Each structure stands twice: as structure tokens, then as C-alpha cells.
Image (cartoon, rainbow, N blue to C red; front, side, top):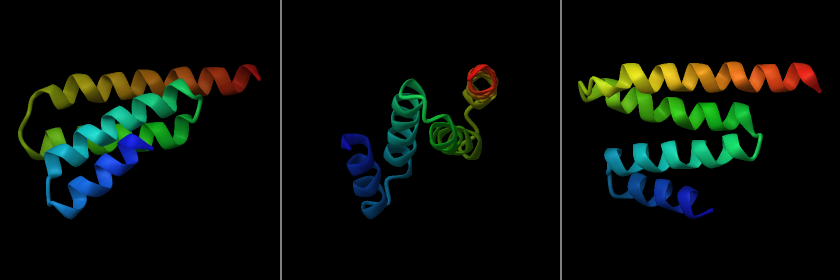
Length: 79
């Protein structure tokens, strides 16, 4: 809930960087809780922010998100 609060506060303050960082952190937590679909959505928000700012790290982070998506799909198919 702390990350959701951070994201909401950042939105109110028009702090796109804070919103993006909160999204990445929340996405990470959700992935660890096996809430993959929701987690990936938040991780992608961060990647989109990086890309929009011209940050070259977006490419590596995008690859990380794709690997996590694949890992989640593999887990779902094993159930």
C-alpha cells in the first residue's frame, strides 16, 4: 500500500519521476507476490517513463520486464 500511496501522491504533485519509480517498485512487489499481470503493467509504466525521457536504460529494463513476463507465463503453465 505504501507504493500505491506514493504513486497517488506523485500524481497529485505532477511528479512523473516519482510516479514512475513508485510504479517500478510496486511492480516488483506484485511480481514477487505472483500477481504477474498487474506487476508487469506497473513495470511497463516505468519503462515508458524512461523511454519518454530519453534514458537509454529503458532498453535494458524493457528486456528485464520481458524476461519476467516469460517467467510468469512458465509458472502459470506449470500449475
